[in-house]
Image 1 (spheres, rainbow, N blue to C red):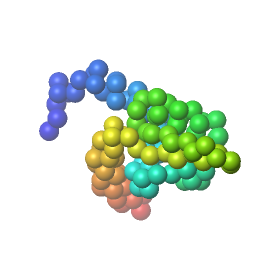
Image 2 (image 1 turned 45 degrees about the vertical axis):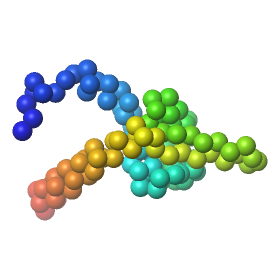
Image 3 (image 1 turned 180 degrees about the vertical axis):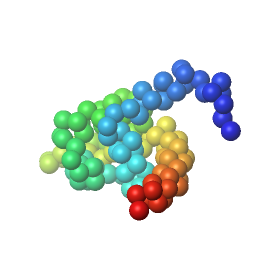
Length: 113
């Protein structure tokens, strides 16, 4: 079991600064499943995200080194996004979150019945 003294606030704050935001973890999740996605594919996967919000979140993820943006010089413009090595290192954490959600989702469903 992890005790509070084992959790460092500076590393936690740093990690959260990279992934905080309504859509960042969702973007990372979809990129982890497909490897490479174009902007329109990401927008479609996320549903109700606005163009401005998605653009901002992608720029921040790129600036923080979690995703790679590859632009092809053609008309119409083609841009692809993928996880960087740093972004790929979050996949085990996302898997743990999915496992945790799966375990607790069934508990929640039992309570609502």
